[in-house]
Image 1 (cartoon, rainbow, N blue to C red):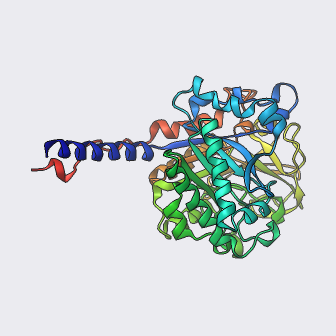
Image 2 (cartoon, helix red, strand yellow):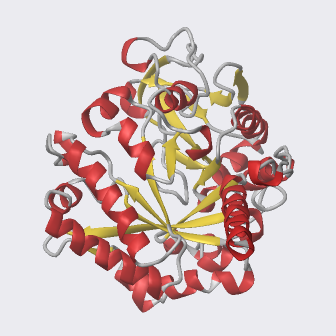
Image 3 (cartoon, rainbow, N blue to C red):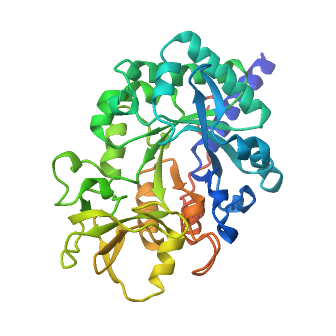
Length: 408
């Protein structure tokens, strides 16, 4: 009888310890397997990952092979030929505390392959088996789905995707359990309520996914026709109609209202900006009319997008007018018809405080290769370092256990 009591007690303690570890704040840093292709010193390699500043690192992206329903490399020349997957696994040798995640999907991947793979039980089983094999081979700790977006016809989605997405996440979780592994399942989710209605069983997903990665960026952009910051914390007076709830706080609220726990939600914050060409150089407040995206950055080479390492170089000019959106908790800058909304150390500190105050699980930084990783404007990784202070300063919870079994 005593042995049984001790066993039960130890079991309860183990559960408590696991729960405490799972509830510790996390900073998930995203690595992109295409950023190595930048010229010269701006080539971003796996070995550049600052594992000391992150609790988790996510490798983006792998894909779904449409014909076989199996996990597949999207960049085999890097993932395999240059041993990207193996080098990622080896990060644990330098940073033993680090948890490694692989992410499937992304914007360029599209939704068609997800829709087809998730449509039947047999194809989902094939996918899960390929994921388990991959996870074991590379000693990973978590798996994330970035399906953009279930049920969206313009992304080759179907009405049935909403149900099938839930089945997919549930099958993955049960597949990991059958394999006897403690691997986490995360899903990236939007704040867009129209997308949520079409593609997400919010109540049910909260029951099967370990974490929800809420995309708190690209909430505005050159595609909207007006210049604005793109990672606003709360709604502003000019956020009307479709954009009224298009912000981080409302996004978190809708998941909480559907039964999600606060400690399941990881808020995604960008370390890049969105740039615009203003319609009028005299109309410069957030929400002003824009004629299109801003010019390409010299290294990111993408109209309307600038890495923080490109933005901070621009700030050295000293010819920019600076602004601060106190509701969005975001800075912006403009010069002539150029307008840029972005994140800086101050804005990330304010958002980190909000995440802490609301008891959320943590933050994910998107992406490492867009911070000032070469330290051209000061200490390397200024934005990721600021986010890491969120981990260091997170209030410690009372460690005392108060189980009934210990009370007389």
